[in-house]
Every structure is written in C-alpha cells, then in structure tokens.
Image 1 (cartoon, rainbow, N blue to C red):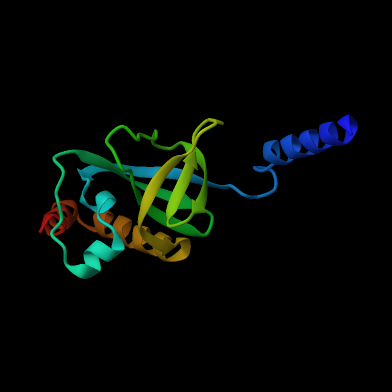
Image 2: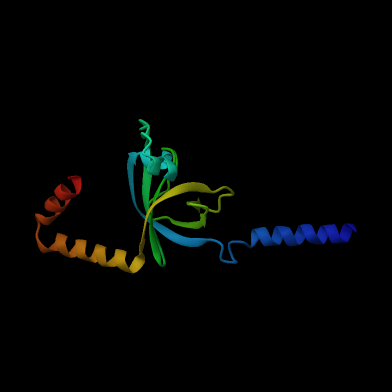
Length: 150
C-alpha cells in the first residue's frame, strides 16, 4: 500500500513539474507597456451590457502588448503593481477569460484581463505600415501621434 501511494505521489509530482514541457504554457515577448486607468480591469461583461455606471478608480493599471507565435494580446493588469519587464520572454496560458502569466519560473501566476487580440500576421502588417509611414516623412510621426491622441 505504501509503495502504491509513493508511486502515485511521484507520478503526480512529475506531471506537475513537467506541465510546461507538455505544452500547457505558450511563450511570448512583451513589446509594449503603458499605464492607463483601471476601468477595464474592474468592469465586467454583465455590468457593461446592463449599462451600470462605471466606478472609475484613481489607480492606474499596466497595459501590455504580448506577442506570441500566432496571436498578439493586449492585456491589462488589475493593479499598478503587476509589472512585467519589456523585451522579456514570458510563459503564459489562457485561463477562464484571463491570461495567466509566469515570470522567471515563478511558482505563482499573475492574472491579466484580455483587452484585445489580433492575429500575428495582421499585427505584423500594421506594424510594417506604421514603420513605412514614419520613414516616409519626418513629420509623419507628429501627425500619427496627434491623431492617436484625438
């Protein structure tokens, strides 16, 4: 009986330790970060559809662009202390309606709300177009920034 229990514990531990190798986690690179109001993180789908007033928090939350092999995610942290270094390769997985991110083999995951998703191929085309516009004229950068703010 003890041998069976020991065997079960060892197999369970090996399964958990090898979860990353089994493909549960995807890899992605954080290419952009900005701080924005935490409105999106605190507002649920039902509250949005019901038209309930949004309680705006004075706190700011980080918004990241995470580029994976096939999909680009715009994710929002739930508090201002959820920071991910730029150009850092992270392990992530989709969990319920959130993205669970692991940093540097940490034992815990940070949960982020998914604000937007786009296919990598489409995102690359948009980035190429923006780069061409910026290199076409020196004043194009000012024009693009002005229109983005409006």
